[in-house]
Image 1 (cartoon, rainbow, N blue to C red):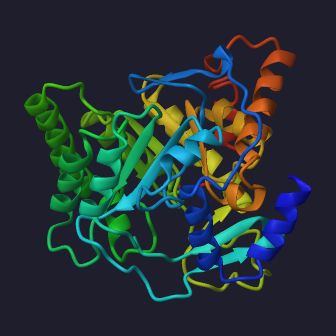
Image 2 (image 1 turned 135 degrees about the vertical axis):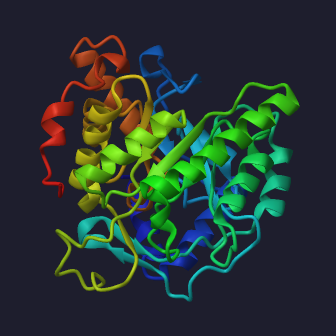
Image 3 (image 1 turned 135 degrees about the horizontal axis):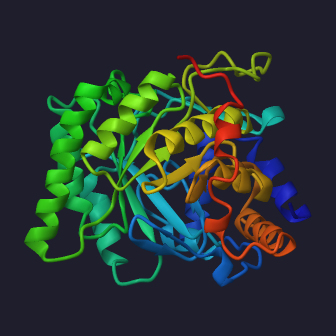
Length: 366
């Protein structure tokens, strides 16, 4: 981390966390944020879900909720950026304050509740950038007061399929009451049946390639739930899973001043749990389905661990808050150095190297 960013972070961390986040988005939109030197190398390229990514490091949904600055974020070195979560109608989310830093753990607790501008505003912004290069995924959800949540997801598919590199179905936020119930086998099967039908129908109508659909799941799953979700995902032919969202657990941060705040925990303390869940999904799904690993990634070593557990691609968010705009370049250079030291030809050669080991590295309930 540069001395300049240390000073800037010190100032930002003195203000309300959500206010600081909003200022960072404003600075990105105005072209005021610069990153490090980003390595470009064929060894970093990844093919997954029928797509070709320039590198495996993505920015997870939640940072750029409204699709305001994806191109500025891509310029920092991210191989792909996921915007959202977006709901059909705008909503304010939960009352403030709702974002809390745990700096001693490089972690964050949030209870945002899908605050976003809604489909219409985001569609306008994403339509304006549709001919620009860069891979931008769109994460869709349901309004808190939706009478038919499945219909909200289907609307998200229909609206954003023509604009998105890929789409993500978010059923794993802990901050919308009842949302995680959609991960249950019967409910998930019904949801994915309608979502995949909508995606296929949209592709047929527009005569374009079918946009890949990912399902984003929680880290707070039992081994039985992992097996059930994997079975439904394969049955409904989703293109991939994103593993995982934030956790309700406070393991490892129990003594932190903000540990008692309601919401999902992200950052370093999530790494072991999310990596074990990821490895168990790879075991359950086999080698074909694309997996994006998320949770506790903060450097090249933690990114490599996700790939060795079974991830094709990796996302981060919380580490970006603590590490600053040069973080993507640092991680990618560290990854390239790792490949060169080990004489590893490409990232596919790294994948699954430690799946069995990492699946057992954190005790998941049966």
